[in-house]
Amino acid sequence: MFLGPSKPVVGKASGIIRKPVDEVFRFIGEDFFNNYPRWSPEVRELKRLSDGPVGVGTMGRQVRVDCGRRSESDFKVLEFQCNRRAIFAGVGRAGDASGSGAFKCTYDVSDARLSTPCTRVVFTFEIPELELFMRPFEKLIRVAIEEGAESTVRNIKRLIENG
Image (cartoon, rainbow, N blue to C red):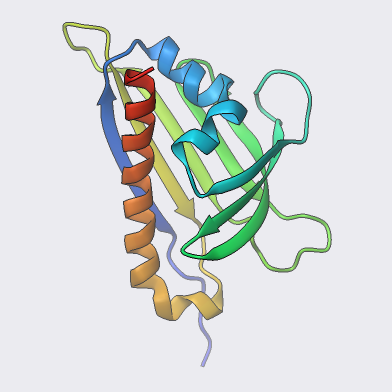
């Protein structure tokens, strides 16, 4: 029996933050290496692997503990449109056959068009393909990713609005 590729596993959440777009994007994108561990408490270590301001090509390494499972992954900024979008994607490391680089996180920000300066944030987390050994747990993984996306937006909102 041949098993083809699995469907991507995607979690998506959005929210309105009562701050202007430039402030929200600065927090998420430009100050990513300072703030990411604050909105994602599963991040135990975060290291910047490249110099200069955050932008396309910026590299980083994270160590996370999710549900008691420790993982380490390298990632790269794939897209960086100031005050609009930042995309981070896992990249495999030399000699790493685990496939642990396969993820993509997208942060979209836009003016919420309300009477006061507010920003709509849409966060999307995607695993393009589940490894074979993970496929029996696909439903659980989908639920965990959806809950994680919602938690991410909630945490970003709380941190930005409360200073």
